[in-house]
Figure 1 (tube, one colour):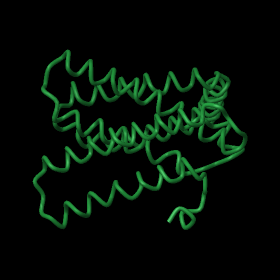
Figure 2 (tube, helix red, strand yellow):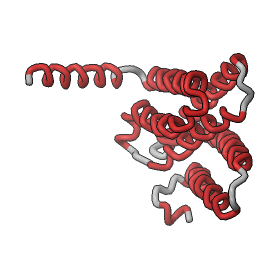
Figure 3 (cartoon, one colour):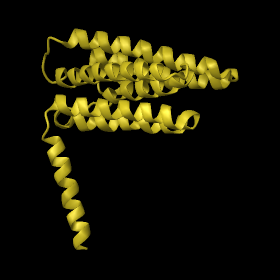
Figure 4 (cartoon, helix red, strand yellow):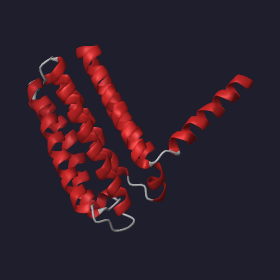
Length: 198
């Protein structure tokens, strides 16, 4: 019993110390952790790592929530989690179509880290600008638009390479098209209700 209590207190202490970091430090730590995760999955697990890509995409949202925790307490918008999730999913799946070379993997992982960091910063701007006006909003929208195009391109390439039946193809295409379009509309309107975006 005493051991459990100590473990709980230790876990709370770590969480408090991590939340005590600045927002930028938390974003950088999150991006580094996710980049290492992507490289590990692709380099050490190979094709079997495809099952861990979904967990990497979910972990992206968990770390984004952790990084923007203070701002999300004031103004929570579930839409900010759409694009980071699909960006990690797209990069993770597209990685399997890239030639298996060490330098290529390092380059792709670096590209993922830079893209994810800029995406996290734009989601941060969206979260804050829905409360007050920010001058960087137009650049955040541009970054978000570019990342949406890259994500859509990667996911579509993966989907085309599978050579699926027409109905499966349309279903999977709809699976990622509708959320990405929803996020794009939200980034301009900041309407929290999905019905308003529709």
